[in-house]
Length: 222
Length: 222
Image (cartoon, rainbow over all chains, first blue to last red; front, side, top):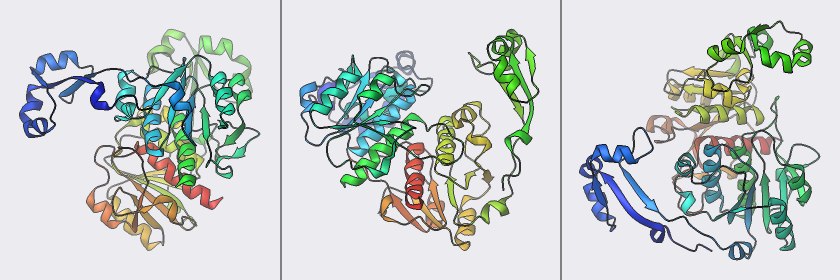
C-alpha cells in the first residue's frame, strides 16, 4: 500500500547558506546528500516570503487502488470538492493522527500539491495514502460492495455521529465548504451522520467536521 | 453575560448596487435600514478582492468578566498566543457548536478583529463571549478557585482526553501553533490531557485539537 517510503520519494535536498551555517551538525547527521545554495538563490526558488532554508524535490507518491481497497477494517475519508488548501492539508494531518487508511478525493478537490496544502499537512502528505477519483459515487458503491459502511456528514434526517459503531470498515463523506455534499453522492451513502451543534451555526469548518468523525472512529477502535 | 444582541451591536448596513438588485426581497424583508452604494465604492471600502456585496459596521461587543466566570458548570477555552487568524476563527466557530461559555485569550493571541478571523468565525464572533487577559496563569488560578478543572492539551505525561470527565466546570488550555503552551501556564493547570495520535505526527492543528476537546466535553454533557 505504501508503495514508496519518503526516502524513496526524495530526489534532491537544497539548503541556503545561512541555514547550513546554523544547522551543520543536524544536516551532516541526516545521512542525506544536500546541495548548498546562496541565500538569494534560495529565496528565488522558494515560494514563501521567509523560507525556512531547506527544501527538497520529491517524486509524487503513487498508490495502488486495489491495495488501498483491500485493507481489513479500513477507515476512509472521501472528500467532495474541498476548496480551501489549508482545510485539505489540515484534514490530511488529522487523518494521519486518527489512523485513516486512505483519503479519496473528487477531481474538483483543490490540488493536493498546492504549496499551502503541502505545508499544512505537516508531512502527512508523504504518509497518508490518497487517490483522486473521477466519480465519487462510484467509489462509494465499490466500497459498499466491500462491506465498508459509508456515512455522509449531513445536517438533516440523520443520527448523531457518536451513536453509530465504526469498529468495522468505515468511510466518511465530507462535502464542499460552501455547498456540502452533492445529492448524487449523498444518495449513494449507507447512511447519514450528524454532528450536533448548539447556537445558531449552520455548519462546522470542513476540517473540524472531518476530524471529529475520524477521531470518533479512532476513539471507538482504541 | 451577552451584554448586547447582534442587533444592538449593528450600527449601519451597506449594500452594493448589484447586490441590491439581486436581493431586493431579502433585504426589504430584514426589517433593517441599509444604504445602497455604487459597486466601485463598495469595492473600495471592502477589504476582499471579490466582496459579497453586503457589509455592516458594528460596535465591538463587551463582556463582563464576573458574569462569564459566574456561569454554572461552564465550558471555557483558554488560548495562549494562537497566531493564525484562520485557526482563531475556526476555534470560535467550533466553540459555538460545542456550547462553549466563553473564550479567554492571552494578549499575544492574534487580533480577533482581524478580517480573516472575523470571516472564519462565520458569525460566531457575535455569539461566543470572549475576553483578552493580561496573565493567563492568573485566569487559570482564578478558575480553579471557582472549582473549574483546567486541563492543558499536552503531549507528554498525560491522560487520553476521552478518559476524563468534563461534566462539571471545565476549561481547556490550547497553546501556540509552533511552541505549544508556556511552562508557566502548563504548571498552573489542574492536569494534562493528551489527544492520541498514530503515525509520525508531532501534533494536530490547534483548531482541530481545540475542537476535539470541546466536542468530547459536549458529547459527555449531552
